[in-house]
Length: 148
Image (cartoon, one colour):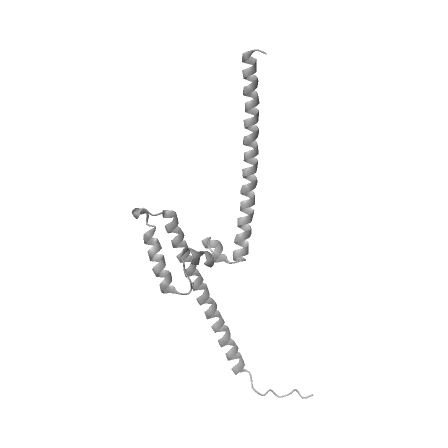
């Protein structure tokens, strides 16, 4: 076998090996991406189960409390203190991360959305109680029995 023929054969063999490796790597990456997307969609569905605010903000209340390092989601004063501290600490002008700063903002917004939802639910429950109480007072106490 001549030298040029051997070199060409080695190049062809090497090219086939590299192209197969790239093909396999691409298929594996595509499979991992699709599995990760399915898992993320499943986790989001499990976490929210119809929670439109979680879908809109991309964060659950639990994730937001972890981002802001809160013990109690209903402690407004603590939330604002920690938000302001983390917002300033991640200021890009001071060498912080814009990404982290935006996560802190989204966490605050999600908790405020939670507060608004809780307030609305409380108002709805109060209105339902008042309607039931009014209905109970509007009914006559002693209804006569039907006579046949």
